[in-house]
Image 1 (spheres, one colour):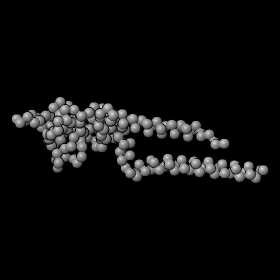
Image 2 (cartoon, helix red, strand yellow):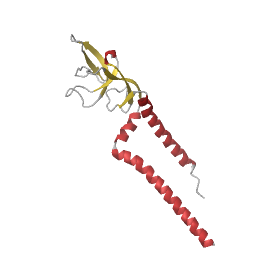
Image 3 (cartoon, rainbow, N blue to C red):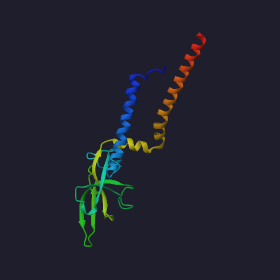
Image 4 (cartoon, rainbow, N blue to C red):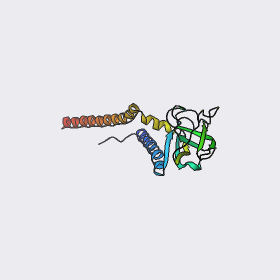
Length: 180
């Protein structure tokens, strides 16, 4: 007869399941609704989007961007940090040829970004909303070692639990065999 699991084990399993479902929902549902997601990895937007926040961007026409919008973009090569940046537009300068030159600033930075840039595409990712600190979980899952531990430890616990039950049942069977 299998031993019933303890209330603590059931509660812990339920909590882990709830966290996994919530994280999956935070990633999948917005993607199904057309949002792109990015993890904030620096402190340049602290106060608005703290490090570890998960921002969701909606792709909008570049022509609709205005001062005050927060966008996620790739700074000009060699001018800024490598990789995507999420900063607020602080100025848009129309040029005679019809292009617009943008300047951005991180809300926590004391000065504007030293570069200006144009957006060549007809659409651009603009921040729609964010979830504080959820990005830490996604960033952790990007680490292969941590991801393997998150899969390996529960698998090991399940295997140990099955082995313990088999050991216990084998002992009970042996005891019953001695009694007869």
